[in-house]
Image 1 (cartoon, rainbow, N blue to C red):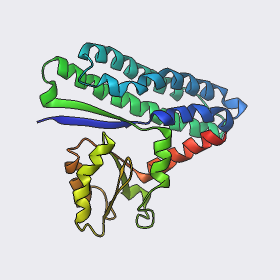
Image 2 (image 1 turned 90 degrees about the vertical axis):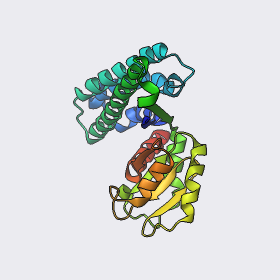
Image 3 (image 1 turned 90 degrees about the horizontal axis):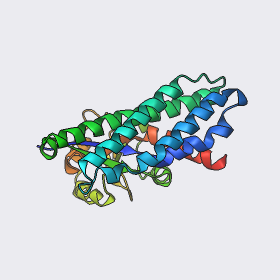
Image 4 (image 1 turned 180 degrees about the vertical axis):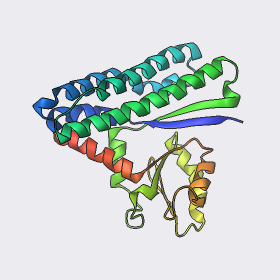
Length: 239
C-alpha cells in the first residue's frame, strides 16, 4: 500500500515575509530583519522547484541532492532566525512567523529526503510517495476572501481548508456534495475545499470522507492559519 506524504509549500508567503521586514520592525530589530531576508532569499528558489524534483521524470539522484540542499537551508535558516533578539513587538512577530515557516520547511525537507532515500533503496512506490503542492500568495488571499462557509463556520479553527495536489482533484469531492452532512458542511472553491467540522476535527465523518475521496493526497490547514497568512501577504503589499 502506498503511503502519501502530502504538504503545501506556500512560496508566495515567503516573499511576503521578506517584503514586510523593513516596515514592520524598528531600527533596533536590524538583526532579525537581515536574517529573515537573507534566509528567505536563499530558500525561495529551492522551494519553488520542489514539485518538479518529485516528479517521476526527475532522477532520484538529482532529486536527493536538491532536497538535501533545501533541507539543510531550512534547518540553518530556522537556527539562525532563532538566535536573533528583536526589541519590538513587530520584530518579535516577524521572528515568530519566519521561524515557524522555516521549521515547517525543515520538517517537510526531512520527510522528502527520507522518501527519496526509500525509493532509491527499492521500497519507494509501494511504501511512500511525497506530494508537494505549491500555493501562491494570490491563492492564499483568494482562499480566505472567497470562503463560501463564512456565515456557517464561526470558529475558524474548526474550518479546514483542504488543498488537493491538483485543482482537478476537487472533482473527486463533488459526489460528497449530494450527501447530507449537517451539522457539518462542505463547499468547493476554485483551488481548495472547505470542510466545516463544527463538532471537532478528530471525530468528523465529513473530514474522513474528504480525506478518503482524495486518497489522502490532500493537505489540510485550518482557516485561522490561512487568515493569518492572508494578513501577512496583504501587509507586504501595503508596505
